[in-house]
Image (tube, rainbow, N blue to C red; front, side):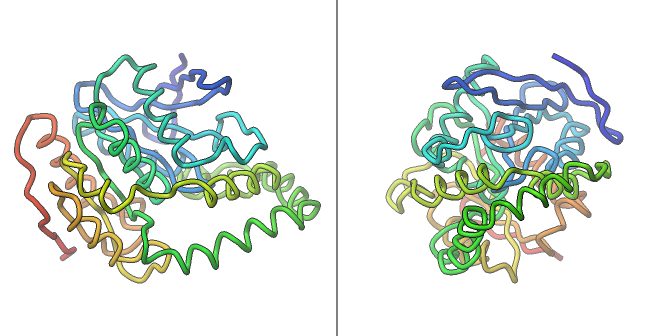
Length: 289
């Protein structure tokens, strides 16, 4: 295990092996209030470093996992490795590796959907959920228009994308997590991108309605307007379907990463409620001021 200095945040980096592949994760902070937070599709842990540092400063322990094919984790080129239910298994394997019975799980977009599958299939391992911009039924048309062309481009324009990736790998990292995460995406080999998109699109994306309604853990849903892939209606519907949920509306899709104070305060308060055993308000909504 190593300790790395990243901007103003100190975190520990480690890895473990799951199904023959190396998965890398970072740990911020210490203590019982554990949140495993997962990045979005084709992004990586860099995306959430500012969030993890802010939450750690408030007495929480935050683990950022690079899912298979992302960031510093292994990158096989078999689409079957990248189903979202396989990603849910990786989160459970991380909990086993950490030696913890339960964690609050969550993440952005893909990370939110992965967390829902973990809670549906392994409810005994989940203390609560923080779901940022989940991708549900309302998102299907926009997601298809976005990711199917990306899949075709990665498969049939691979030579040009390999050149782009080689250039991106030479670009110095900025130290600003979200930008570095996007640069990491640009540096990814097209064969890996194609495999990830193929696997995600053909496997289960989200639990069924009946499975969602059976998830009883406290949940904080974060959402915003004006995003076709992460529509507010999806977040509202999900908050209504989950028996113990609260919806908080962000000012923009970038608020949590550019101006995180308000939303990290909401998340930290939620973690205190979950880990202190307090009852979470059911299906309430908190819009941004």
